[in-house]
Picture (cartoon, rainbow, N blue to C red):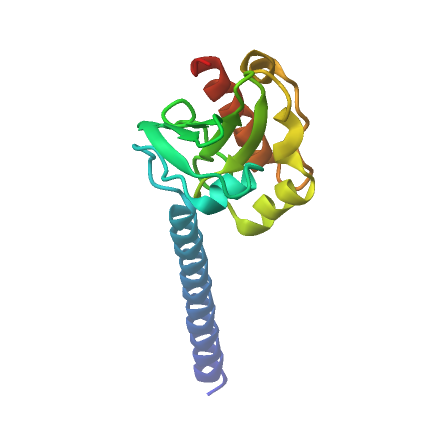
Amino acid sequence: MFNVFTNFAALLYLIIYIMKTIAIIFALLAGATTAMAQHGRAQAPAVNKAPALNAKNVTELGLGSQQFTQKADNVWTTNKGVTIYSSHPYGDNIKGYSGATPLFIAVDKSGKIVGVAPAANAETPQFWKRLTDAKFFKAWKGLTLQQAATKKVDAVTGATFSSNAVIQTVQATTKQVKK
């Protein structure tokens, strides 16, 4: 009788061990699937056209409520002679934390940058807020396009991917546009 109970207990222990192992495997697979799905959502779609400039962007560039008209696919001018460039296509392949970081760069008649502002993007809002709180976009104000193309700007702590993408996007854009 003792052997029957011993064998039954050993079999029961083996069944419980197998069930625990299967449960752990399923939990690991579920976690990996969730992580992969979240990573996939974080990727921004490829940018293949210039972002639309709007009144909010113009205000963020420090231009108040100036009226603007589109001059080309990625260029606008305001009623006060400021030229606004989109970073498209120059920065389309430069990625931040969640994808491309398209920008607008406003240049006055004398060739000086009056503002840099973000266009719509997929960056995490809390990281973007760190950049705006640190006045990061003002780093290029007053520079010529040539100066901005080579200016060394420090990344914002806690938003390094986004910062570096913006820096590279400004550099790529200012190297390509002609004033």
